[in-house]
Image 1: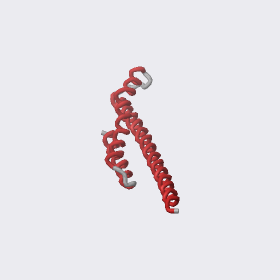
Image 2 (image 1 turned 90 degrees about the horizontal axis):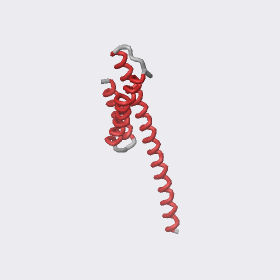
Image 3 (image 1 turned 60 degrees about the horizontal axis):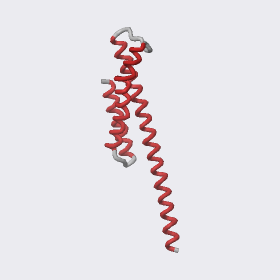
Image 4 (image 1 turned 120 degrees about the horizontal axis):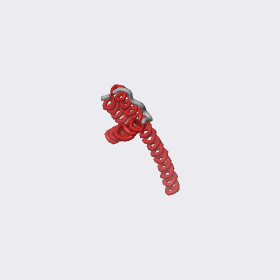
Length: 115
């Protein structure tokens, strides 16, 4: 349940950030959902059971197992979101720089043609 609530907050944050930057909010929201949920699935279905089975994490009760699993899932999902967020923001900055360069090239080309 905690993972679902976090994922909903992540989707909303990605969506509103995109809308504020006049980008496609649905695409950013989808990327946010996948960037959270894929690491959660990998941790919950693959890594965490292996850690318990190998004895790396010792679990003494069912409640402790659930708490540890949910905590590791949430942390891995948040790390995935922060990674996707930084990539998307860097990509947007790169697009803005590219647009500025193209605009300056077009201005210089237009000046040369008009002379």
